[in-house]
Picture: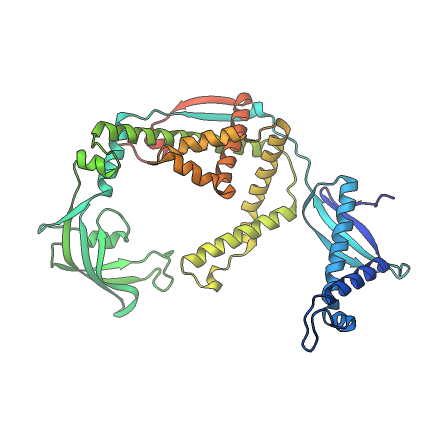
Length: 436
């Protein structure tokens, strides 16, 4: 006879399982006897421990295991028989019925995956970036590479943007020193804006050996709560002032970036190739974000609470581990899953929507797609074949490219039906940098 399944809400279901007590006791007895053959206890040889002693020591644990196994087995049988797609884990609770003394009764409350009303792809609008990598973009990248290899030469003139300073500073609030308010041989580069504006302004114009006193007002939202909103008086002394010297773009420069012959043209070609890969990646990222946003906006579904809770817990754990890795105490690093529930809801929703689209339209990534994507990405390395082999050695590494390939299939599928408008865009804007 089929089990009666009660619908509590759109997604929530509940039913009662009945497990014969005799079957439970029989299985417990069987496992206790099996355990007695191998269990070790002081004063007894292996296999010679009395069954009653084994039952006394291990009985509660064995009973718990048997009940858990039987409940899971019964739950799985009902789910399979009813062809239910269970979302998350069921909540199992004992149920007491004085009229039924021959069975253990349990209720299982759980959620099922929602029916998803898929989006009408023709109402989704997408702006497709049309981007060209220009000679100016290559030149800008070379300039960035030069800055990465900057060296500094001592100077006797006043400091200015780009100069590297080594300073001592000492700050006090109402004459009292505070944590983080003093340092010796502190290195800073003017113009990088890593210090508060008043600090940078005071350092500008200093010559080696000069000192300056200035006031600095900490913002009300400053991360250092003890000084936030307060004004400190600092004394800063420049112990060294050096100006930046960028390397010329010559053969030695090219060799430093792996161009064995030192050809500047070869270096530019390599830079352009890397920029083309980045252009392709950023364009795809833009398209993917718009496609996913459109799918979410035009799809209708109710998100299972169990999946939201599980994802929020996972996100909180990841955030906590990251905070600890940055030196936060266990107490300060502990993040509450409730903080992540809105983001978790969107993640789960998008996973369900995309999953249904993939299933309905057979958009799974093929091994050939994954290999082609990996080969393309590996070309930016000195030995591409070794990079490819490294990824194929571990399925977890390869899964990253499988996910991207699947996303590409989803994006391509949606673009065939969506309203797509091509829009020209400078490469610098695409990657979030101001044009030269």
